[in-house]
Length: 234
Length: 234
Image 1 (cartoon, rainbow over the protein chains, first blue to last red):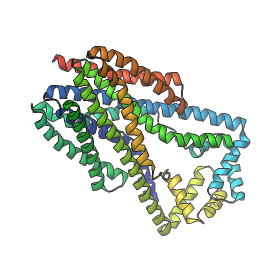
Image 2 (image 1 turned 180 degrees about the vertical axis):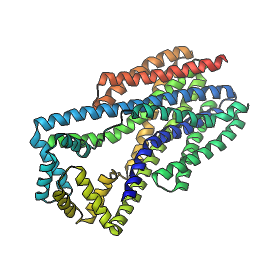
Image 3 (image 1 turned 120 degrees about the vertical axis):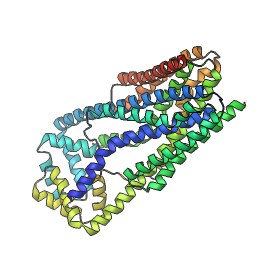
């Protein structure tokens, strides 16, 4: 019992940070990788590829980081506006809100007698009543106010770290096709490792999970390479 | 009453598709925009910018689309593995699971008498009991099996549509700085409109929401432009 609860709480706590890293790093590894691959198919100069890659990493990390920040803020605003509305409804339409509480217990398959008793007890405390409506009618949990800022930072940083992996060979190798070969090898390995650990958290098979993430990266890079070759040939 | 329920159901149904469009389009508008802006600060040839932009759109839409698909599949696998586990627990540790149901009712502030009665009634139907544990202990809703595929398509397509907006001026204007000026104007307008409608759904102030999304795009593009200029100057 204690064990299960601990297990679930850990699961929830770690999932916030991990969700951020997963969001940031999966895109960070994949998109700059595919961009560099695409350009390597059409451009000889590694300088242009490095320039485009770093511009992309800057753009992507800011867009995703700020995007994560905005999403967190929006979640908070949304929660607060719904909270205000629920307090208003409990004050002004108590019968309607009471009926919604009863319907929740009805949906659990309880008898009418227990539905009514539970509803009577629950609506005694207004704060608890509103909290119940927020959670079980609207499915909203109270967001952590510090979360939006942390989330922005985590996502942005993960994107930068991920993005520098596929780009790194272009700093050291002058021939873009040679650099691409090294980039493909190290990025696919990193994508596999990343997918492997990601699957550990979500509880699905780790080898399949690693392979899937690797294949997404390979598909994106292959498509970008092919399309860039096509455009260059036109 | 009826009205409120309809409102919430609509809210939930629309939010899946809208979440996908928001995910795909906010990145699609922002990242190719910022990449093109960054390259415009360092490269004269619009051909290279178009090439990089299209490679990025291909890479980004595939990465995000397949990423969405994988996320949906993972959610399903996770749900199924937890469902199996809950059935096992209900069969093998019924007392422990019963106690968890009672604790849920306790957390609502019900009296011990009503807690016990409600628990007795709820655990009569095993499927309902497991469904209850999935939803209220683990916070997991049954995922829609078609959702992963739809989600992949929606996110990928939204990314392409979003990404073509900032890139379009480079097809018609030969000077990269002139093309950038037009790209900035149309993309910022689109980001504002996009943020405005996005805020309508989440219920926060639409003008603020539009401005925020626009500013993220501007910040990403400005940073990419500045960094590319710096690298080019080295």
